[in-house]
Structure formats: structure tokens, C-alpha cells
Amino acid sequence: MPSTSEMPAGAAAGKPAGARARGWAALFYAAQFFFGGWFLFHGLNHWLQFFVQPSGSGQGMRDLISVLIDSGMFDVVKAIEVAAGVLLLVNRFVPLAIAVSFPITIVISFMNFTMGDNFGIVTGIISILLNITMAVGYLDRYLPMLVYDAEDPGIEGLQRLFREGLK
Image (tube, rainbow, N blue to C red; front, top):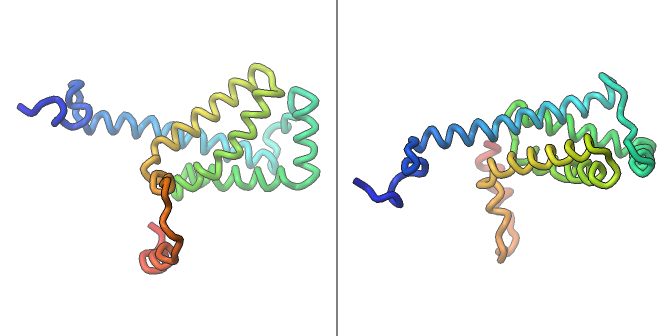
């Protein structure tokens, strides 16, 4: 009988490795599809107005949202939310959609933490946790970017893109 260190992950705990992996995949997909639906719904709401756009619970938040709307930046943010939401829901370019969503999530959460009410704070926490959960699920796709000592830049990536295309 193999030692515990030689067994596949999950086998030592009495579960087959595949069952544990499927459990994690279910968690990651649940976060991905919930977050994707949330972003798609709230992004589309900007143009289709399913409900009145919240103006914010504090004066600072109302001022910021007003400036974002008046400058047109809110349109850009909402377009990104729609695009990222669709990509997450159709399970395409997911690592990119997660990476693009993170800055929006951080700003929304920061606004809710500093200028929001209790509901806004909970919303901020949930959105950050969902984004982190999704990112952990695709961490293997991000690890190549996290090199300490990067090599010289080159055109190998561009050549590979044209040779192999997008997968």
C-alpha cells in the first residue's frame, strides 16, 4: 500500500482525487457564473434600467457616481461589466474576464467600505470574495505572469499567437 504522501490528493482523506477536484470545480464555477450574472445584470441596467441606478448612500459616493456619469467613464465601466459578465457566463477568455473585473471590484468595494451602509459593506466583501475565488480557480493561468526575474522581452508570444491561434 502506498504511503499517504504517495497517494493522490484527496485519497488520504477517504475521497477519490476526482471527487475532490470536482467539488473545487463546482465552487469555482458557482462563483464564476454568479459573478458573471451579477456583472451582466448590473452592467445592462445602466442602459436598460431594470431598476433605478443607486446614487450611493453618502454624499461622497453620490458625487463620485455623478462625476463618473457626467464624464462618460460610467459607460466604459458598465461596458466592461457587460463584456466580462458575458465572457464569464459563456466560459470563454475567463482568466482575462477575471483580471479585467478585479479593478472594478476593488473600486466598488472601496466605495462601499468607505462611504456605504452595512448592505454596501456586505456587497463589497462578497464581490471581493467572488473575484478571489474565481482567480484561485484559474491561478495556474496567472502563475507565468508572476515571475520575479523576467527574461528579456521578445516577439515569441506574438509568433506563437499567429502560429497556434487562440485556444
